[in-house]
Length: 447
Image 1 (spheres, helix red, strand yellow):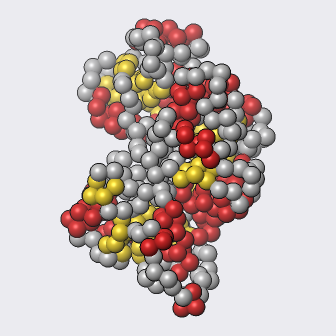
Image 2: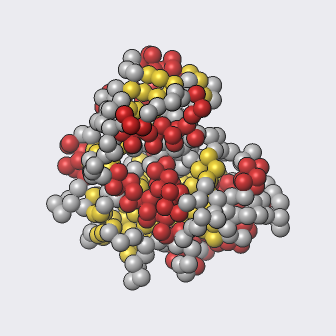
Image 3: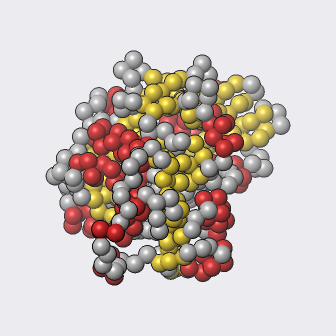
């Protein structure tokens, strides 16, 4: 492997994964991290599009034979990642010089590809450093803190978190497979002070705390932090009251790993209702239609496909996010939904997020997703899909509608269909709800 060699790796969150990625960065290789849960379709696409010369795998992991998949795909240069102690000794004197520029593309991250093939997102060392620095400076952590990585290291959050560790000099516990309550022993054994991941992780910690009210499940925990999915204000208040720690939430994406982040010393109102403020150097533009656009050092260079790059940036070089939002007078960003997550019912635009935030305040709702479904009469109808916590009273549409009316929701926004599910479909990285799967499943269901 040499400077410019394209190396794909599909590895779990382990120490040797970090060792490998550091080594590849030192020699100036181009890295293409692949989420370890991806299978032949996504992996094959990533290998072909990136033109990877080497592919590092964990062998058989969680019952799946990655080596067999690599052979089936005809991947080149496949090798299993060995533990650090089994690596041969090397002479640093024979290494090439460190990379001289931080602005060359050396990272290819992959979007989730929920409705089509994934996009190969092009990052530089500088863009990843800028994203991680935003996270680090916002959270005000110290060398005395103990963090935790409960997400795939191959996710864009991997370098985000790693840069934060390097900047502030504190350790983190790496969870190869995260689940609760199993992980609680490790959190407590290492005295973790900072945990999180995304809204789903906050809810998981709350569920464990509710099993033992009055006794902290992680006594050393002082901060939950994360992003990657909307955070209802109700979740913030529940964390503060029940877990007894602070909660800061941010906004990021594969294309821009960290855009804004809440700070622990923000006001309670801002922490509950906004995504925090951008760092110096991150420009946020809100268009006349309310769309969020971004420009700054943390923004990716585009995509492997030049046509996708051309469509992703406006004439002033701002990345078109597809998110809707507004900036407060204090400079905090409030996200109000997705351009594609607006339900158009009888010509009226309805924000799914507005309804979801209200549903999260219902005591018998554990989690909720609101989608628009095709409707011959209305164009689209509003469908609420909810999970219920253990022991909750059964829900029906009239009861939900009455609750939302009492909460002040306009009549034309009320759900016309309610689906109660055992579990909302989620991805395997930050446990984000996959609304496209709900639309596929319920698209032909009558209200």
